[in-house]
Image (tube, rainbow, N blue to C red; front, side, top):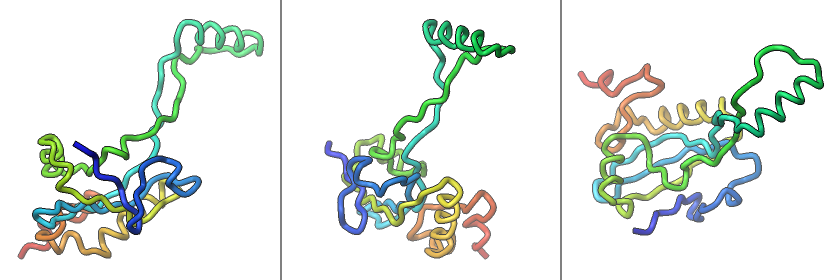
Length: 158
């Protein structure tokens, strides 16, 4: 089944080069078309992972450290940056994940609301949009059940 593209102002976003330079992540809204329910969130474009060094890399590193006169334990891992799963991402909500497992990607629209250029601002803008769209006050429209793990839909039920 063909994946649904991300859209930004109606324009498809398919590859990293489609993002503005130095984009760290984005704020998104995913809509389940049959129910018209939405989920608002944030997504990073890159992950930083620890990769175990191979034998050759370890030997080279040990030799370099010896030549520089460095003491102490030689690191056995290095940090690498890899592209995240943003292309196939639909959100973290259980309902969405179950529908995606069933192969129902075509039932979703994925829109990028804003490009963001730092980790801190990614959280700021996600929170801003969650409050601005009143996601907790509109459970018939939004699937989001909390904001920052501090504010919950249940807080609005009387």
